[in-house]
Image (cartoon, rainbow, N blue to C red; front, top):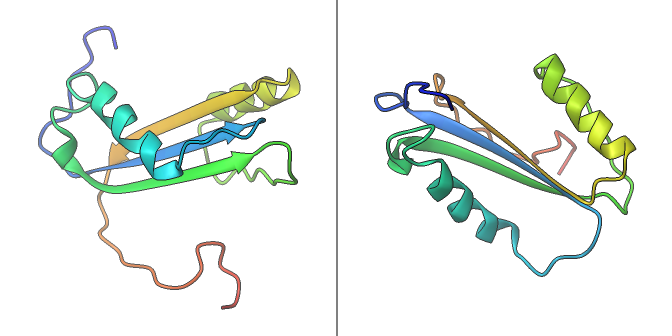
Length: 113
């Protein structure tokens, strides 16, 4: 990170998007720990600072939808470029300050139960 400061005093969230083309026998929960461990000491001081972690696995061989809901433009374009060239595995990781503690109940996709 070229000398970037390590986040050490704020609650954080992580968003991990795992897009894959071929079936992989790894459970979605098993990809979280190695990723957070790799970021420790580089992006944040300790993974105990993570208050929320959202992980999504998308099977690119099935129908899917991509919605740009205010993502950084460069990241969004890079993702679209990788999909156009047929990349088989893409992992997007976002870390930020977890400023608003909120509990949301119900379906994640907003559909009716």
